[in-house]
Length: 94
Image (cartoon, rainbow, N blue to C red):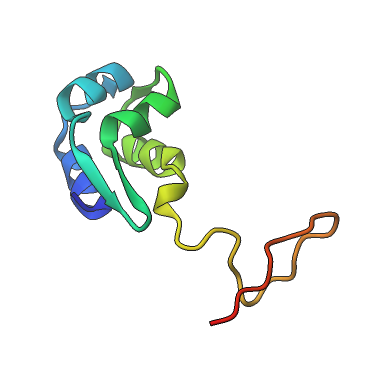
């Protein structure tokens, strides 16, 4: 399932709800991410026990708890300089 489909799934859920209920009802749905996949249950388990009064709160929690599998190439930017005090990623040639 795409993130857009997961968002619609959360929008259709009955609110208020909590993390435990979201995991019980939707935790087995597999999210297709750019660098792999993970279940919606694994995402919400990272959040911990929370109560959501609206779909917006659940969506924000989901997006904040996604793993690095949801990110394209990590540490990549062709515009921003490396932060001072860090070594940064190595140069990649295409």
